[in-house]
Image 1 (cartoon, rainbow, N blue to C red):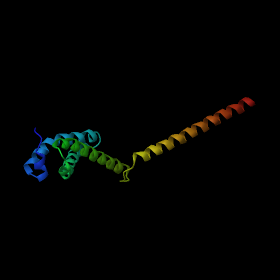
Image 2: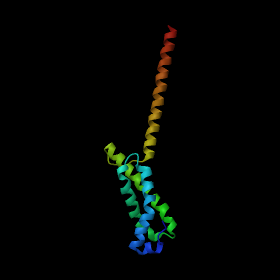
Image 3: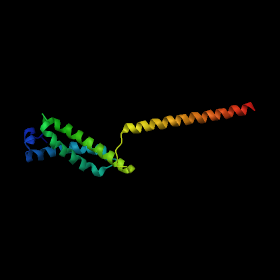
Image 4: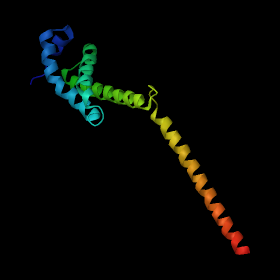
Amino acid sequence: MNAPNLQALQRGDPEAWDEAFRWLWPVAFAAAQFRLQAFLPQDVEDVAIEALEALVEKVREMRSVEELKPLAASIAHHKAVSRLRAAFSDKRGRRQTESLDEHRDEAGDRAEISLLLRRSTLWRKKSSLSYCKKR
């Protein structure tokens, strides 16, 4: 399949957009599928279509038709990640997305608390052994 004519796309030519859709669909679909197949396979086509719709708005900024494939893949990837975040947020019942850094901080706090508890438990065991030896 040949690349579509960029100037025709920028003018909004329907035939050029039909050709562009056939040319870009496999790229957008593959990027969406890579991220969503394991968790939300039913959303792959929707995300690929949303990516191509978003691409329509960006085509006027393009200088080369070769820029369209990487852009389609990037948009599809980001939309898929957003869809996953929203789905996992719904699954938690909060309907809010969260920063991964926040989770990393919480995990670090839990690890620190766990370490302190282990040290405390070891200290108590060691103390009880010392007490037994003194008797």
